[in-house]
Image (tube, rainbow, N blue to C red; front, side, top):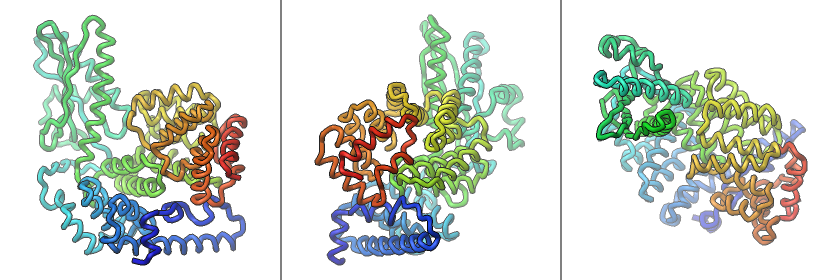
Length: 538
């Protein structure tokens, strides 16, 4: 390997890791725009060639985290080339993470199918077999049986009434109330299809065998709720069973306080709904991804997992998963909502001033709502994109409607906090953000960004820096970190982050903040610009 390649592998400069030539520049002249497009392609090819040179020498790059990062960069630039995928799988296995390696292999197969209409090349496929990543498909240790009705979209969940309670009318009545309330609660998630309680009671009355011939009565998961008493105590139990193999994959028991029955039942319902929804997601996530048989929901889960980061390659990886999901199930509202988020987050991360990505985000959000008018996720994305189009009242209206559908969704609360902040309701934004962190104590990257922005407007700059520290290595946060450090009097650190801004966004000017940041009150924007100027940006 050349000396230049070794130097890059050790330092991994920001120009190699992210951004593009003259990023953020709005080319007005068609001839210059054509030149710029070709120049960016040339830079991308040179980046890919340099990354290929670095990754080809496995003995010289021994740091596994560096190899993972380099491989992710190469696959983002050239997603259909095998070397980056092979390096990524091998590095994850060497680091002891078979799970991440298998995800990398799954991503490779999906990308090749969706972008090249092909399978991975022979060398990449052979490596996957050698690393044991093909084992779930070839030698299933505990294969999850396929659904009997060829589902393509979301899994179907049915709530079955409790049995054997006729000798105790109170228990039976409580059981029926819990089934109806849990069914209503689960319906807000909309990522799986919950069957109405009336159908459950009818199937229990006529017998499951009498309805086995209809596709509409075929289900993926069955939930059973029972109420039991004894020794002066009353309690509810709930279990989740996978229909295909009759395996109980989740169960919970919750006491019922008879001194305040209504309040106690509300607690039982909310606890059951939240944990049961997570159990369905986990069960689906354990099914191997197959090029032909994976459901749209399974592909959607991979996209949702990838979208937590604020790096461009993570967002674009998530976009590929969501696109694969909607190709498998073209009316999948949640996947369209996910697509909307990838476009709006890319616009935000890149600090863009033109509106093309926001327009695409709005189109995807509208499609999500078209396919499911009562989708809280679709309304959340409409609120998010409306905010960055500076339509504050419209944004808050969307978030209010979404909150009525998903009152305990941490991601929604974080976005709502962001909308309140930019509307000038900073104290209220902090309250919403605290609640979001309570619901989601291990949050995705962008929570830190929103939290820091709130503290910055409250002039608590030390707290803003603390909030950003977990993501301080992400280039997209460098502007806010530079401004926060400058306002806190930490000038050397402010200069360092300002240098990161200049390196990653060479065309950035502080005046562009007026176009990027959607503050309703001009004085809030001026406060951010003051910090950026103090950091040495102009």
